[in-house]
Length: 373
Image (cartoon, rainbow, N blue to C red; front, side, top):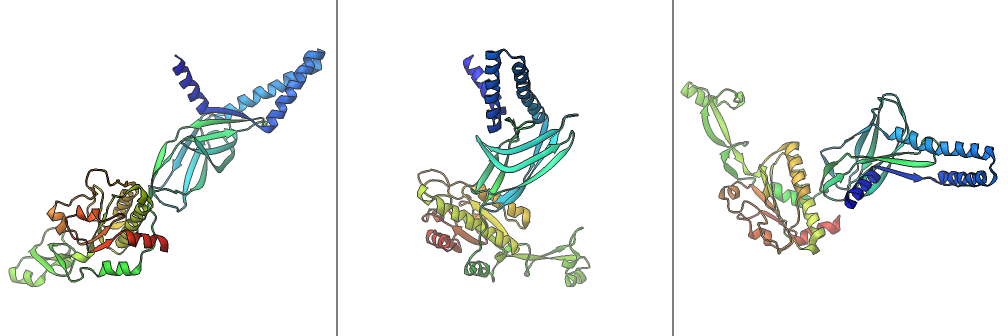
């Protein structure tokens, strides 16, 4: 019974709070003084003045409550934001009351038990009207950024009390690792690898992989006219995929607590490489911890890679389980293309990978990059 009452009280106080302002403190002091004078003197004018002052206090509570009722909030956020880069979020507040406007509204973002003042105010919101409030958000930590509800307050009409109401508006946004410039020599090594090699499978390239009969939907530019003239059938030329256009980024997630900052640097390195390689038209695959993506290109694939990196977690060396996935799959190793291994701690990541990375970015290289930035 006691616990139930306590939970109800906490829920009520969480949704509605009232604080006396400095003006309200002085007003209440004068009200108390007038009440003492009325009781001691019995003067009807003092009683009349006391009644007026008490009615002002009561009106402040009633009008403020009406201003805060039946409000609706919507928050618009991008699907992905970047670490330490400001983005613009939008909060839309709508007055769902049919007759009563709301005045002097002040809004706070709520994160956990903390109220974040972003300077959002609405002077007047008529019935049925909406107001759009843009404001900047800067994420200081990679991962999932939770956003709680919205707390709205008003001191209308007399400024004696600041009454606040809480509106739940739970949301979260994924914070990508920081995208930082890469060393030109590293990119030159990656791009230069495998220029003379090709994979024994069809795909985008220059070498001939196969000739087959034309099917509906095939690109007419791929028709092989010599074979078509010889066989009297439309024949299509399939090309052999080029290995240099495929890159696998392998990020080891094993690192002790002392290497937390270095692990974040490794995640940022993987994100920066993915960003640059996708922009150059490469097919990029990401292997991070027990998670492996498929090869892909384009902005949508890049966003998926950045979300995976944003949500990856460091594994302490004592933990059991794979550091990288896919090491036992021969086809995975065979179709890796150019492989880049990023190791924030030791060489344990290489031991769990069945292939041989073309480029290894280890702990000393990450430390040097961190100091350079």
